[in-house]
Length: 205
Image (cartoon, rainbow, N blue to C red; front, top):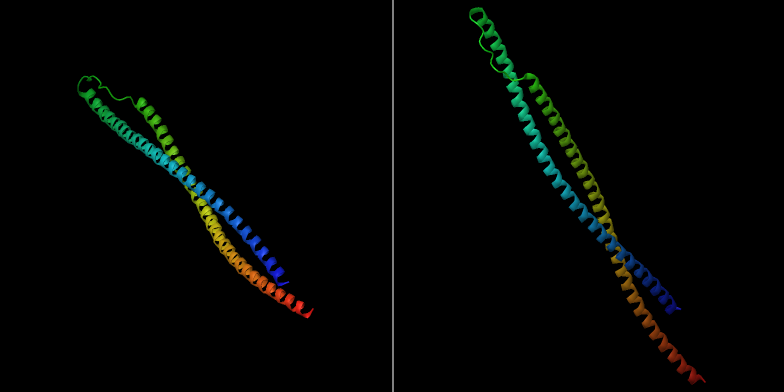
């Protein structure tokens, strides 16, 4: 009866240990897959961030150039208007004293307004595209950080599972070894008792 109980305990512990080892192997496969997924995510984030840095630099350079051009043109046409006003006053005075002098060539204000208008559209486009790039970068970084944090939590949980299941499996293997030793001792003792009983029985007969 003792041998049967020990055998039953050994079988149960062995089966549980084997099941735990299988679960540990599956968890280790999942950890490897998670590490690969995170590595790919890191690479993609690095590449998209590098693209953003390049695009941002290009857009900021373009925006700066357009704004400088606008500043120069606005100052240019503003000074031309002032000069035209002064020139007009001088002409009025000259008409009162002497014959009119030939008119000097002046910048075409209409053409200037047209050029400034086109540059303002360019400025708006650059600014809009820059804001769009910055928003997309911020969104991509937020998503990356969110997934990375989720992966860290999942990794930690799985590693803890591996640790505990491995420890439990080892404990069960140790128990199986001890139970097997007990069963062997019990079998030896039982064999000795049976042998002694047989001898006594023979003598009694």
